[in-house]
Length: 117
Image 1 (cartoon, rainbow, N blue to C red):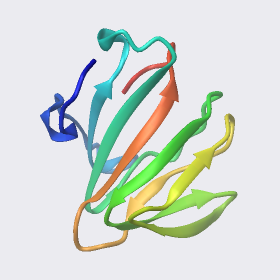
Image 2: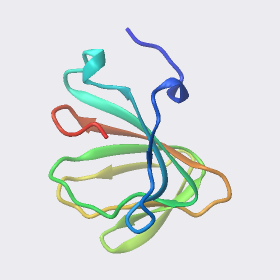
Image 3: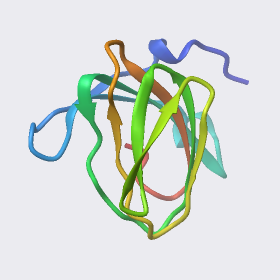
């Protein structure tokens, strides 16, 4: 068993200003923990931060932990805030961006066997 606060996990910064800006990613439960089916990650987007717009074949599930932002869904931006859940099927273009004045923090589950970060 592993019990920890997400902020204790190793932080990886993503910021190339054109494709991704102000993103910190953390693998909180993954293959090194013996998780054979899923990987849980936490992301923090700074004020004005955004994830890359991308597509991949695996699904993932997101829970907005805190903050406010928008998610790109079928070409339109949909507002999200604390408590919202998001299901992104495989092969669907998506992106998240922070529209608030505080960090947008969310948990993201992906299947094992794909890149964890």
